[in-house]
Image 1: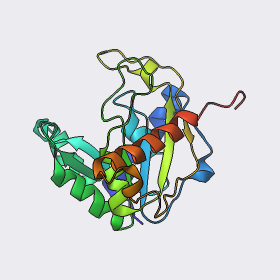
Image 2 (image 1 turned 135 degrees about the horizontal axis):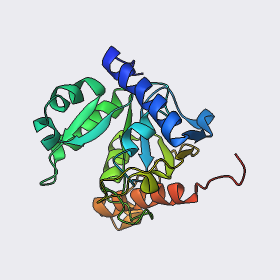
Image 3 (image 1 turned 180 degrees about the vertical axis):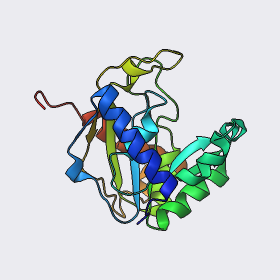
Image 4 (image 1 turned 135 degrees about the vertical axis):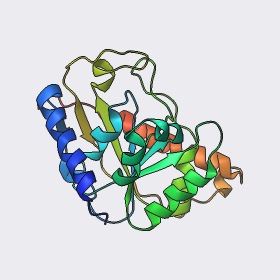
Length: 215
């Protein structure tokens, strides 16, 4: 289990305060969150706000992916390594980052992944990409489906304006994949087809999560 460094705890606490004060942030079914052992936190992706919003749903320190280019931003470049960020080269297929994710999960940590790969342009769910399926197959870790509602309205892709609208996260029941699920044979013996199948399963679980009528 990943404990929180002082820097991580500071930003974790600040994120919680900002989310609750400005965006009436709520978490539905927080009791479902696995707080120990290897875990993939799989969420839809609507906004730059999403990584910390998923992170503050967990009581432990979790890991995130971020573009290497962010290191060039003053202060942020020094901060990212201290808040559990795994750097990704977005210009190509960064296998080193995937290997880092796999090692991190296997070490008993939680890692936040966005199966869609990029922010939605209209707030709706996009098809998942095969990357998360590869991580599932290599780690055999449970997957915690998470769905964010409201972050698109608060800070949509392509906008430079923030709206103080309510944001809610619904935590789903963990998915646990069996040996049969992870056998590529039923999927035409093609590993990439297996990875896509696993990603599709995760996206279906995210799609099933809805806001309760009253909360």
